[in-house]
Length: 191
Image 1 (cartoon, rainbow, N blue to C red):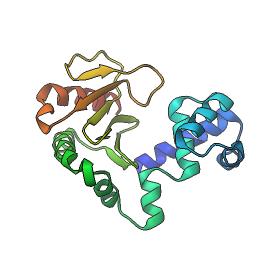
Image 2 (image 1 turned 180 degrees about the horizontal axis):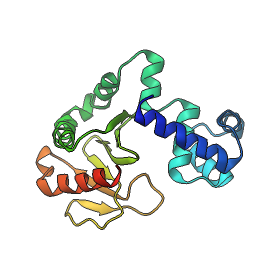
Image 3 (image 1 turned 30 degrees about the vertical axis):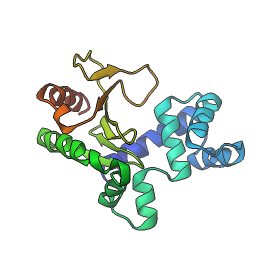
Image 4 (image 1 turned 120 degrees about the horizontal axis):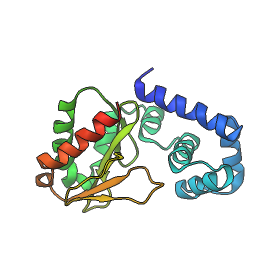
């Protein structure tokens, strides 16, 4: 089992302990709740079972089989195919930002890449970054780091989200040494 799969399995086991429900029971409850959209289900799980954002998001992905890895597995696609799907059409021009970031991050050492439906999650023992197109014209780098970050492109995010910081990038030129240093700090903190 890959480290990312092991981390999700541990997270799901912890969710079962928190809620007193098995994942199968949670999936059945979701099917009966009347909610069909990802965000609606996630909010319902947070309100009904007092789950945090990340746990509710994971349960929603499991129930809908909507994360990139599950979707790829169901169709026989590879994670690379999922990545190609993220950067198609009006978002294709953002692929160089992704490649520039990944080339720098690859130098840090070992980590897992978990392609999702619209972005890529980077994990060690826990997620340290998320990257992908937010809109047709804006690429986002999400960073998980408890320390204060000082970089003109990096903005703090209100508590409860998937990351503590977001950097909106419009070109691979935005990926400077200072930004990579912030990501490396997050990488080191996640290990």
